Length: 84
Image (cartoon, rainbow, N blue to C red):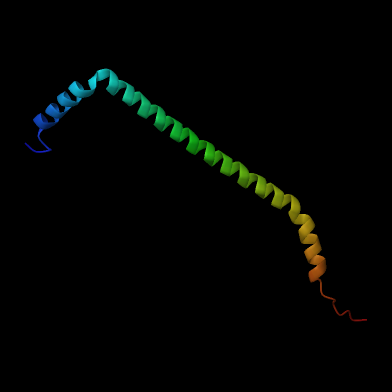
């Protein structure tokens, strides 16, 4: 009797059903399903929060960029020689 034999798996299934019963297995299945759904929901919310934070950062950088660029341009300006 090996792991690839169908009778092995049927016997294991019958023993599991006898030990746990169908109601406990049904409840365990729904609990596992709820846990997976909650995990996916949390991952989706984390991704949305990260996306929102990135968007806010980009907006702040874009709003601050013209003021910062103008001051840097004045500071980096070199006097030019003008011919009379």
